[in-house]
Length: 565
Ligand SMILES: *[C@@H]1O[C@H](CO)[C@@H](O)[C@H](O)[C@H]1NC(C)=O
Ligand SMILES: *[C@@H]1O[C@H](CO)[C@@H](O)[C@H](O)[C@H]1NC(C)=O
Ligand SMILES: *[C@@H]1O[C@H](CO)[C@@H](O)[C@H](O)[C@H]1NC(C)=O
Ligand SMILES: *[C@@H]1O[C@H](CO)[C@@H](O)[C@H](O)[C@H]1NC(C)=O
Ligand SMILES: *[C@@H]1O[C@H](CO)[C@@H](O)[C@H](O)[C@H]1NC(C)=O
Ligand SMILES: *[C@@H]1O[C@H](CO)[C@@H](O)[C@H](O)[C@H]1NC(C)=O
Ligand SMILES: *[C@@H]1O[C@H](CO)[C@@H](O)[C@H](O)[C@H]1NC(C)=O
Ligand SMILES: *[C@@H]1O[C@H](CO)[C@@H](O)[C@H](O)[C@H]1NC(C)=O
Ligand SMILES: *[C@@H]1O[C@H](CO)[C@@H](O)[C@H](O)[C@H]1NC(C)=O
Ligand SMILES: *[C@@H]1O[C@H](CO)[C@@H](O)[C@H](O)[C@H]1NC(C)=O
Image (cartoon, rainbow, N blue to C red; front, side):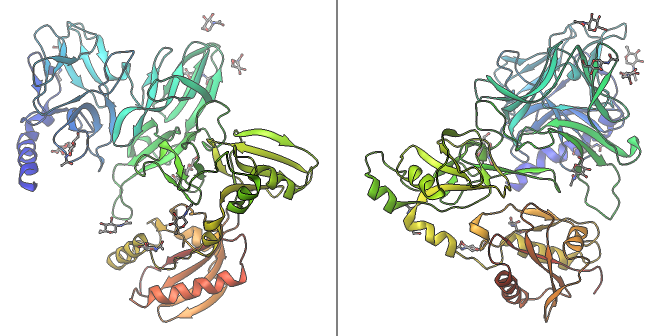
């Protein structure tokens, strides 16, 4: 396997010197996925146009794409889609061939010689991969006949403009370029982000928009993305560059979670931090807000969403006793792992077998189907338990109001609301187990962090993000997300490592609280050195903290270590 992969790579390397000098691509030139010429580079080498595997390292299927050639992951900025109305990603086998033919047209043929893609332009004198990331076909008089900037996919680059009639469509998954669930659409009266049905593409509703006399959406050379209005006003969508423009690569992508993010990538990050794309701005501000439309919201049906302001990442979760229909494609939603309540079941059996136990801070605001007023919380619960259509309730004590919610639950999100009690219907037999279920062992992620620290002792505290997985013995078994913390966040949470709760052989443990909705209680251990005993010790210390803050606090595990021993 390794030998098979190596061969094409070597061929690429041996031919890269002449490729880099290439600026004009002359008529008659061609590319093949596995031949000596599989891509054309821009003059600076920053961008490449050509064939690349759909999945890294898998040489069975290729995209025709534009990508950043100098970022570690060779980020894709454009890929060939079939013509409207399908506009689906074009994937070809190793036998495919792209030619700039003698008529001055580009043509992509599959291994049987059938044309599978061509841009709508002929008569080019040459083509060129420009340093802006635009791959263009140019006429003899120097005018651009067609460019990849004319048919954007999910990403726009510096100096690129979107005009009425153009769209951006997210991928379904970072590694699956099929049409995703979100669309940036534009005409002369609005620009908006839509949730769309898959696969029909039906626009279910928008969740961000600007209305007015719209001229274009611009990603300007200064790093601001704005909508230019007919009256001369520019309305900023996102902006922000942490330093000089030239120090970074830039892109903005409608991501698979529906967030439009503007990113920068430090060209020369030096030795202090791993090179990576960083978010400098995004819209909408909170993708977990209900979308007020048909569809499930950003997470799938029956799941719930959490947008983490520290990392700007969206995570989707299933409630207890629910699991993802497809763990790799969480947008498909969650299914109950139990037999839902039968409508033939009499009231007494229903009350015996089901319970509204999962008190949580998750709301599914668009799933209401019935409301009651002036009733007690107990009555509210009984009404739901004896109703086979009822999946969850919300009770507001101040107004004695009860809402019943139906399947499938949609637009679920974490919401801390002291006024309301959110309850989910679950089978009784297992609900007691949920509360008792504990898992105090270290996760693989945590162990990996430890080993990483061991290797890289000087840099981790100031620059490396630390990923921490909460213990599963958490408040109501919420299964909180894997979260990335910075050293500074730990410092803040522990008030500068002030309150010591224990000292073990390997380091001091400090008590702290995160600045999140539920003021999560954490234990942070500053490790002197990593050793085997650490795991056992820490478990004990975390439990001690848990005892002083039992209810409504998540026991979270974190550890950190200073630069030098
Ligand atoms: C590219 O081709 C055009 C038209 O033939 C020519 O004017 C230009 O000088 C060429 N550029 C380079 C860098 O070869
Ligand atoms: C672009 O990527 C190819 C393939 O990884 C590599 O051989 C080449 O050196 C890169 N070019 C530049 C200018 O970085
Ligand atoms: C490569 O991808 C194809 C689907 O495109 C899949 O069937 C095949 O198993 C993959 N091969 C490897 C080695 O992952
Ligand atoms: C231009 O139009 C936008 C949106 O319609 C409006 O907010 C703005 O005030 C207008 N500007 C001027 C100068 O009229
Ligand atoms: C929109 O703006 C353009 C450019 O200023 C103007 O020509 C056009 O009349 C405007 N359209 C409307 C409907 O206001
Ligand atoms: C809007 O942006 C354009 C460039 O596209 C610029 O010429 C113009 O001055 C800007 N308008 C305002 C009001 O800033
Ligand atoms: C999150 O986005 C904000 C801009 O809205 C940015 O300042 C911040 O650095 C981002 N955080 C991360 C971890 O990307
Ligand atoms: C309850 O838990 C048991 C053991 O953990 C499991 O086998 C069973 O499927 C669960 N029942 C339901 C209804 O989820
Ligand atoms: C506890 O966590 C370990 C490591 O993450 C895992 O292998 C194990 O299956 C978990 N046990 C339970 C009961 O969840
Ligand atoms: C931990 O590290 C191993 C080896 O580097 C890797 O295979 C595994 O995926 C990592 N696990 C997690 C949860 O990061």
